[in-house]
Length: 396
Image (cartoon, rainbow, N blue to C red):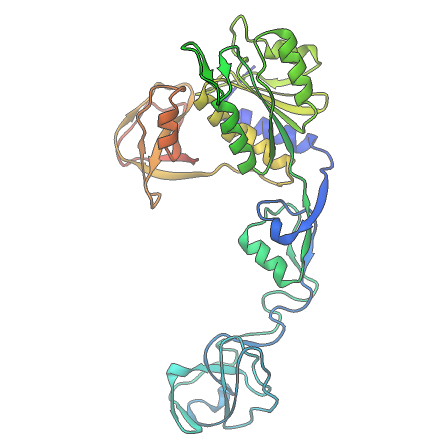
C-alpha cells in the first residue's frame, strides 16, 4: 500500500518502538560512551556544588554591612577553605570557585570595590545570596542527573565524570546488515564496464548507519536471481536490522519483495508518496525489521535519513528519533508539481537563515548530493514558493 510521508514515518516509529523488545546493554568506560544511549539512571553522589561556591572574584561579605568600609581579614581561593568567621564589618578576598567563608552571605565583585591596604570601600548594596552558588543548587545528593534513553554528548560525558562514573551502562549498538542488490553493481575497487556502476550505496548507508549509532556490516552484492538474493537476505537476518538497496521496484528482475514474502515477511508498506524514493518497503521477517530502499543514490540516502535512521536510533535505545528539520527563507522562486513530498538537494547558509536549491540531474546525481548540505522538504499540496518564503529544510 502507498502511504504519505507522514503516515509512513509514523508507521516506522510506532512499529519499531513497539516491536524492539528488551534491548541488550553493556558496560563501557564513560570516556568511550560518546554517541551511545544511556541504559541506566545516573544520580548525584553528593550535593552539587558541594559547598556554597563563589561565582566571582571579589570579597566575601555580609550583605547587611553594605554599603560601607570593611576590614579584609584573609583570602581564600579555589581548592582551599577559610577557617575563620566573617563577622560584622569583615571581608575575605575570594576567588571564583572558592568556598564561601562562614558568616558571609554575598560576594561583592572586585571591580565594585576600592582597596587601600587591608581596607575596602564598597559604595553599593548587595542582596544576600548574590554572586555565589548555594550548596546543592545544581543537584542534590541522590537526585537523578541523567535518565535512561539519553544520547551521550560531551556535556553528558562531563557530567558522568563529575559524579565519579568511570564506567556506564549503555545500550549496545544495533548490528545493521547492508545488502546491495543488482547485476549492474561492482565493488568500489573494480573497474566497471560501461554498463556497470560502483557500489556507492553500501558505502553511504554504512556511514549513515554509523552516524545514527549503529554497527554497519556490508554484505556481498546480491545478484538479480532468486537464489543469490535469498541466501544473502538470510545472512542479513542475523543482524538486528536489514537494509537492502535496490530490487524493490516493479521491474522483471526486482525480486526482493518476492524473496521476503517467501521467508514469511510481514509488510507494513511498500510504497511512499515521496520523491526520490517512492518504491520503499518496510516490514518484519523472523522478528527482524527490514527496509527495502530504492537503488538510486539520492533515493537510498533520503529514504534512509527520513525512515530507516529512526529505526537504527530506536533499536540503539533512543526514546525518540526526531528529524533534523529547520525553516529557512528561499533564496529564489521555486515551482514543483504537487502530489508528492519531495526532498531536493540544497545549500543552507552558514547562519541557517536562507536556503537555495542545488542544481541536480535526478536521483542518480551524486555530485549534486555531495555539494548539498541539506534537502528542501517540498510539501505535497503546494505548487509554488516565492523568494523569501519560509520552507522546511532537512539537514544532512
